[in-house]
Length: 82
Image (cartoon, rainbow, N blue to C red; front, side):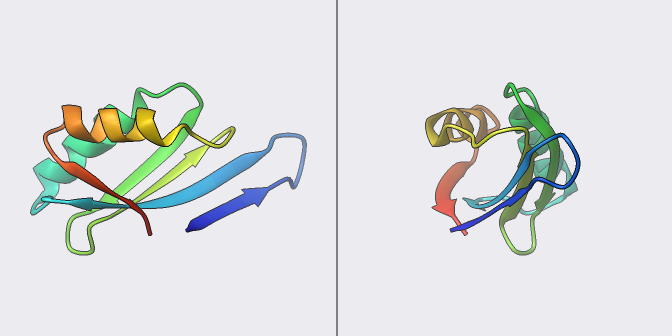
């Protein structure tokens, strides 16, 4: 699991890296990023098709079921945390 909490300043951020299977191009990255961005508290999403990794920055730890549902909605499969 890769989760990192940064409390520098007043806001807390959590960075989590997930493994997603099936992404093969920039369009795939955009679809996954768009769906995950819709989850409350998400401030940044970076999907990389080549590695299958999606880095999510949020204001609090995310419910993995919510992330799984977003990835499913985009047409891909959440494998788990990297």
